[in-house]
Length: 174
Image (cartoon, rainbow, N blue to C red; front, side, top):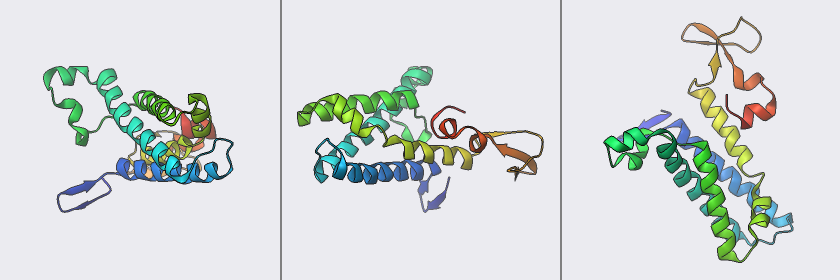
């Protein structure tokens, strides 16, 4: 958890999702000004809204279907317990694909053109995701002491995600 304000708890993942969505929105606005796909500012806003719903709904539904069926079998309300965590990258990806297809259909555009426009947008969100993995100590490995190590609870740890190939550090599983 990053901080608390009374009964409200703000988690690092929430902050990073917000930063990722804001960065995607900013980049989409910049791309819309120069891209061959003609999008007005309100179109970009709607596109990001659709994508956000795809990430959140798809990520949660994917998590429940891929990893939480036993929890769901015991508790019918489990899919709605968002505060307990649980998002799936694969579900989020499928959710975004569905949301962008719906956006394209509603705007009378070809889905491939919308996909092409949005390809670079998730990169910053994935980057922020790796940062929160680092903050939450989810990617540490024990190695012999070397440059770039950190002390965590008295142990020397190495941030694996920071020393891998940049493409793997930002995009792929640890």
